[in-house]
Length: 387
Image (cartoon, rainbow, N blue to C red; front, top):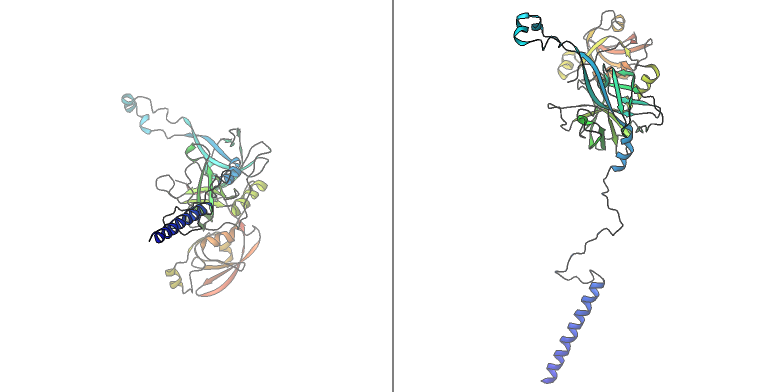
């Protein structure tokens, strides 16, 4: 009996020693034993490893910030004199405080801009500098200098300024066709005059038009916060390259609601180069008013679809009238380039060189025909007032 107990005690002791040895081995090599209740091994960044989040856009902001400037403008305006101030009886009781209300007053405005060349050319919005008689540009380092207007294009809401300074940090333009819906973008400007600010969002849509903001519209839509004062500032991609110029927001309160619009670099570059070379932008014009072809219009005109643009009006004595175009015609092509809608037609005609002839294909009484028109220079159109 004593031998049996001795053998049992020796076996238990051996098992305890074996268990202790296995636990010690598991400490040296974690996960060797599938023991329940053991702690989970967490993989952590070693000291000296990457401490910043991988999704930081600090490098993009650092690259783009020096090329974005603040723009301060001022102009003199004459307020409307109250006609009651001409009544001596009224002035006797209420004084002459309003008698001087028609004196000129200086009104200030602020916006943003983007340096586009090292020798001092700066892009901004037309509405930022419209009618200004004094323009000051403040660089990212705080240095301020006077700027002059090289030229403006109200129909795209772009303007080019010039400062007499060289060696400026110019923005790098992104490829015109490189932007996609969903790409991350940064909006840089001076919202509400608080100072240079960076906001982040994505590209919500491309090619936005028919918004009634400007004559020529092909906007980038973004949810990056754009507020008053951001106008004319830069919209850059995740690498800090310029993809657009911020120009407008959709808002009923004056603040950002996540729907902002920027002019893409494809339009920006074309307008900028023409203004620098000629002081203005030259576009083709044939003297027509157009509207969309709705399903109802297509049905009433016997059209196969809604492609094209309906001629709603023809300027008397204009190029289109001389060519024989009439209200009610539906334009479907310009020099064999198909017209998808009224906005596309406007762009196709604007691209035509003045003084040259162009073929317009149209549908009249369910029959196709082509008419030759001599293109003229588009007259300066007044931009609709911005709220």
